[in-house]
Length: 438
Image (cartoon, rainbow, N blue to C red; front, top):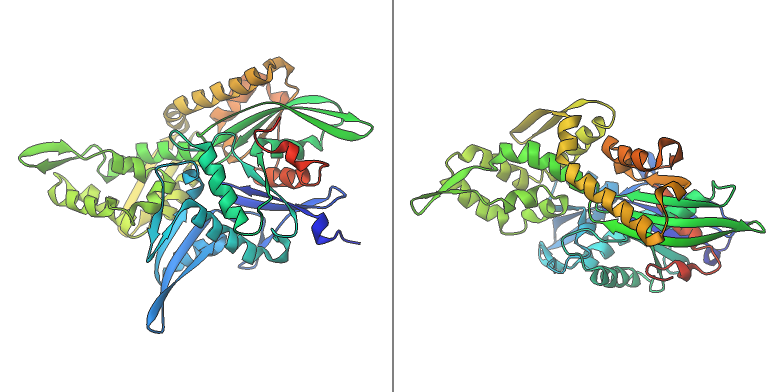
């Protein structure tokens, strides 16, 4: 007999790039919610939104889709639209107050609420936030410059409460991954969980033991940093793409030759900021700069990418070359669209040089987790790696150097956190795992 709806728990791993939802029952059985799209059963719901504007009668109406449907509507391009990705990165930003989409203003919690509503609509009865024990993942440290974690959590709670999950429990994402991994353990062990997302890298040291067949978990220490896959993407865009779009170029102003301001390229290389450039004043300012640029052609290509919403195509091109460099010493970066053609070879050694400072900061954050836990590297029995960035060779070497290859293990790069969060929802006291609690 299947468990009643109220006996089920739901784990939500809301990620910068992808979102996964899992359902667990009292027997410990857990599975991901699947989304049927274009004949495929998807367990990963892309964290993206597409708003489009249509005429209805004498007025106009704004529609919104999320996940693969957002990408589908964006690529169809049949209506005026706004495509937004990596918006989780705004969660802890006090400077991000709102963005205007057609006639309406959206705060972060409005964007998150709109995204979750599309997920619930396509997930069906399985994603009922009002009748189940809801456990939501959150980073140890949110992404962004000077992140305000309290503000981010206020925004999270507002969005989820608006959908009926006002009693949701919020748990560190690596703790969710640890609960998933712990099911593989047949003996007591001290484990380091490393979760690499799109916006953050988070680490938890956990002690797992069993007594009378019951798993006991003790959190020993956590650390996190707002550097992960998107930061590595930034380096590729900054080094390969931006120089071909006018970065470092000059323009004339009042008889002087000045350098084109770098902040346009800083925004361009960050997926969350690029998604908003068309709606901000950046596009207008870029057009004015192109009129007085010494060499306007590169700037005109920059404008075309923003004006024709080619950010998602650029994201795919960057992701493809980054993935290729995980197994090859050299890969070809290729981006084409609306008259813009950028092709350039990228070597793994160049890429690793670009991200060396980022990897060093991640290494320091791993050391912080061990220090907070009061555990030496040699006392860690297993290291559980999750997230796509864990496949970057420089990241993997970091862990091999500290812990040895035989202690490393990994699982599905997307689903482990959501599975663990759902399992926490079936524990005797899920709230004991709430972030920040002892």
